[in-house]
Image (cartoon, rainbow, N blue to C red; front, side):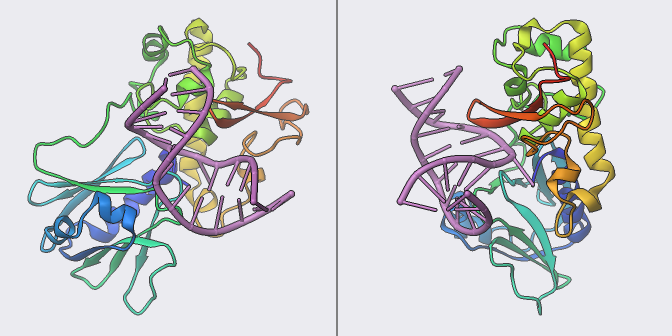
Length: 264
DNA sequence: CGTATCCTGACC
DNA sequence: GGTCAGGATACG
């Protein structure tokens, strides 16, 4: 699920559920989660009040009243579920927050690649991140500087969270379709017009998803073929020019693009 | 730079 | 049984 728009809605859900509530218990239900958050550490969260849940890129920061921070990253398949105790935990419940109003905030993650880690006051748990993909700091000027020494294809560069925070594999392909740019273009050889097109392409791709959470996220969402212009549409017709959508692999990840209207 | 790795499920 | 999956990092 999770690129910036999906994490934004998830963080909002976590905030609505947990902000201002006291944690009665924090349980980890999978060995890989327990490695990152050992039982003794999880136990130390008991009694903490959740002050707020913030999002930065695809990261979530659960701020605790003590000044400590729980850093959450969904990776490939993580998501929050909110349950009332009579309801059974989801099949892939990995971390469970029991809250003092009786609700449960559950990290649901079939692949168990999500991470939840606890950090002491004053520690910034975030890795180096570029500007928010949806913010004004993410500009063609910034991109020109960030890409100046990068000889990787532009699609690969967009996945680097130090270049721009929040873009993942789906929206990188989508953004380049909006920008009408060939994903194989070398990042540091793009001109000012092309960089501006990339910035606006990223904004359009993410903005579209941010505006339609009910259609783009979670159970009952519409099929990928409807949500996306190129992602997972290999062989189908481009909505813009009618040519067949192609797929290639870059840095081990699938890229989808239209050779008819995305040019170098 | 590309590749392996952490996991599990879906699909061919 | 093999391949692939919306992420990120460690490594050669």
